[in-house]
Image 1 (cartoon, one colour):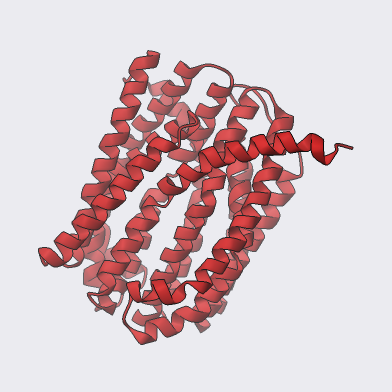
Image 2 (cartoon, helix red, strand yellow; image 1 turned 120 degrees about the horizontal axis):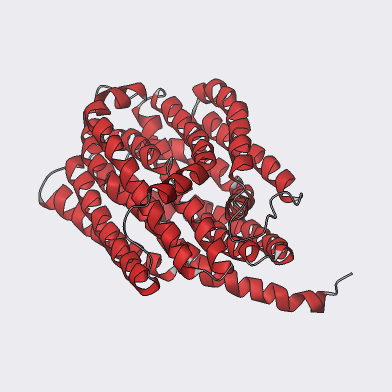
Length: 443
């Protein structure tokens, strides 16, 4: 049996790796929820109908973009494996293929989202007063989808190269620009919710330009080609398909929640939007450890070190539990500080109090779920993640539609159930060795 002193150096090394990657990743990951939180805070003071419209359109927009989050996750794992195997040029080339795939995906999405915006907003229960604001925000924000998908792919390249500091710098700059532009356009120019959407689109395109500059420089240093490679693009799409299924199932969970909340009225959907913005912020904070997991596990397995991958996984799970406990406590204790930033409506605040309690209690579970999700993504175990998420959706959907119709608290209890089911699926897989496949490319 290994002594505590013998395992201490390895744990210390894992801690340093996790910190070095997860702290900068935290800043980069929270850029998108910070965009939405800033929009919610600014738009919330325009009125409850505007905030309700933002809640519906933001859920639709993030769905249109985040179903393709495999552009970041699959790219991170594939690039990290190449780095572990010592082939930096192939790693960068893999990332460039992912960026071209993002461009190909973005064009038809924008072409469909703009004309279909009214139907999409009505489908998800926008009321007569909220619908005009939801449609306006969704149509303008759709123009930023190519930039958002490009950012996902380019971020995956840098994470796989074990660089999470550059995404942090770009994210901080992008959030600052987004906040300033939104304030100027919403209040200074008097554009209302349209100004909020426009400011966010401009910030997203600026971030995309910064990422592409970094990736192009990396390609020139390693000799990787910038031209589209049909075979490489097809390989990226094939590798990402299971993660696409997994993400579609996850987005279905969130969209069901939004649709149920919308049918409870403007006050409920406004409260749900604030709660979901905060929950997303915490989720991305916890996901910082998962991002470290993707890069670390991919590198270990690429180098053929399965034992190191398993030891790193155990340590990251411990981090996930601790971070979840801390964030859950902060969510409850700091309510008097952040709630006034989102809404002045006492009815919305009254509905938020019990919902935030339910959300806070689930954070330790969320911490473990996000960590193990990242570990299995880093291992390229997308097929299992797809089946696990489909199973979770099958359990969650009938519960959310039944219990959620009784009120917002019931809906959030169903969301907690969803996370518990995901925890069971992921823990079962992590205890096996089926995901510990070594080599530069997962067979």
